[in-house]
Length: 492
Image (cartoon, rainbow, N blue to C red; front, side):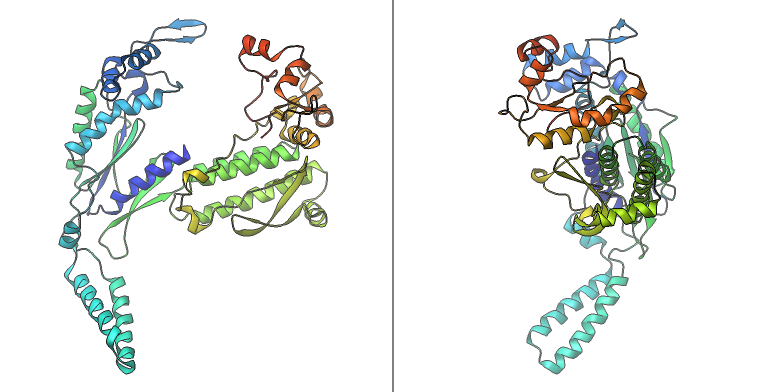
């Protein structure tokens, strides 16, 4: 989701930065029950425009008409794509592409400036200064020392004046009056004009959706002036006039309720003092980094990130203090003496954070926000290393904590403790947890760390009295006896 959002926000900002006038408006679009009301016939017709294989189209049609179960009652589906289905978002985007094409073809949205447009909009004063700067730079190449000093002084003064001079003439507008961005069934339309023009655009979109078999929500589709913030994809978007007073720039801010929500989540994790330290450290780190990666495209997010990092650090310190029955100051003193609290380099920054060694692997409380210079510089897809799903807070209570898994894998050096040949695939827990009370599960967690056995898939199946072939035929999930979350109890 964060990756898709980053592309949309960057795409959204380009037309917005070029739209200006005294009364621009934004249309917040919302489609009534989009996923539930997509007509199957029109959707399959849209798929056939790009897919010629009728077998594939027929398979998609069967997927759409498969129905669903609710309270053990089967319901037929006559329209829409099932929400939660693996291809439902793709089918929705295929169907709504017709709306995108209409916006570009008939309304001319997101048109960029050509060189001719830029030259036509440039102010005379800015062009005069630019031409004079070009002449001075040419003279500097052949000037002697006394003349160079005079030219340098004039050059510096003109560059200062150029920074204060608007590039565009305020009376010459951008050729595009509409900016448009859609994410699934939510979209925004930026209208560089009056409220009447925005109403006209809204009615045109409603008519197009009506011809597609969908309906625009009258309650949720609003017209908002740029002076007021608009919530879109978790961001607050607002227009502000630039310093030179010619253009409006888009400000993407992090909503206050989103900041409070992530603080409550971190506080909730650190408030469960019975969680193993490795699980709490991993979850706080992954939740923090995931939240920062999502909001890294906000305008100047560093202050918010720094405050959240400070909050998370002290929350984890209080977690350790309560868990070990000592004060926070004592936790810090002992951590420094044992080198568990020491300065390390993370993302090019030297920070003091908590560390621990589990099974020969060092875990770090990584709550370091990205640098300002690297926020907008996305790495290449080939080097992306996405965070894994944070371990659930309850996994430790059934003997499948991250600390248990890392301890067993580290003790086995990555090889199966049963056969000694194959790599570790899972951790076998000799003590069954089914039927035990919550208190008994909590008490047995420490014992599971020493008794857990790192096994390959074949040995794990044999430990439960079944072969790997029988396991594949019976439940289709080879090597997994217990019901567990993804990533827990598996070697990485």
